[in-house]
Length: 580
Image (cartoon, rainbow, N blue to C red):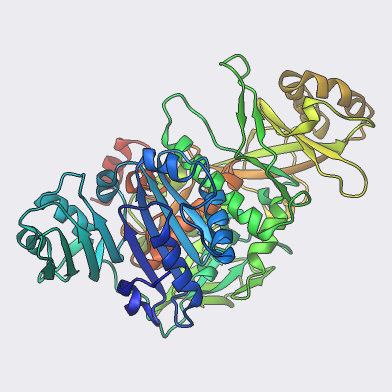
């Protein structure tokens, strides 16, 4: 395949974004991907944003066989692409290829809707509108997603293209004799104001970020930035990573389903698939993760559901794999007590005033612990006015799960895959001592966990929490509960406990601490019981915003995860009243 000429300017760039409004999973994307693989001066990250209609998606991804006969290498990459893109719902999906260095943002639906509800700054644009409405408003919508200096190659129906594109900010418009194919450059004579992307990162300088917390939230952000060429320092107050709720022995990666397809449901679909991509690329299948499917029991609210694109993951193994990246440094026993501005950087100090790290960018990811640091009076000038109200809504919720060994001869539907509904039941892989299982967990209001309570933290007596887990299991899977009841009664079961950080709407806080994301302070917290579903997506959103890359979901949907979203309209009025 011949390399597209529009990519000649990417040499030496940290990242390059391509927008293709007629994505067909065919030769153009494969040519760009191959060009990137073969170019020693390629950018660290290649972002390819492809618009595809639902009809074309169903046709293109109905088989892994390409439309033409490629080489063996091309056939392999086609298979990788099709496996990652299979069974996707309408909307925006982030696919990670080439060990995460190539990001395909697949937009399934009508192109016009994505042009108005997707944040990106494309460097190369291939736009085709033969069978779409094309007018001056379409030209302005296209300009909205272009970076200054972007190259446009368009196939258009007849019309006054030079005039419409010129009004939208395109220059050097070159139209063919038939007036349907053109080239242009986006370089408006005016400032784009709020839509002008921030100054891009200096390709010759390695940016540095400090992440506070080494659980799912912190490790996912650290890995997302390290993949983009950042240097990352992770500060963890405990002696090891995943010391809090992220240390659950095994957890589920499964989307949330709702009748109205709420933002939580849509985000969980995207987040679950993204997490499974991370697991597949970093962990050992069958030992550390499994695409087992998950049986969802509706408990009388309708027929059960079978989630095929779902499974189980051992969180600690994933966190350790994320943190093993060569650009990440982890410091344990490093508890941050204060953060102050020191020139152009942020200084993070411990209780003795010793500087633990200094960085341009800081991401707070220590679950409920973000409250104390971000509510500090010294940070008042650097945070959004409404943020204390958002932090005040955070809840600490304690959970205890029950673990044990599978009884001899365990078989049947209960042991074939994980089950979810009223609590969960997860058969655990054989680790040498036989198959295990996890059931639970409890969900009790709690206080912020302390360093002393990280290892052993129980509210109700442990026996009472085991009894509650058994009761939930009896409702979820009576056959499993009957087989395991003797272990509960004999007291041979084990427990795991942790305290989750939960938001009012059960969606994480993933965004800037200030109102506009300009001062380098960010947060990634509030995962609740769905850290395995939301952490990778939240990290990808933060990294995309920091690096001025395509967002992994629609702009309107991303607002549901933003750290600045308000619980109620009244909170804005209260904040404004407090500031007067």
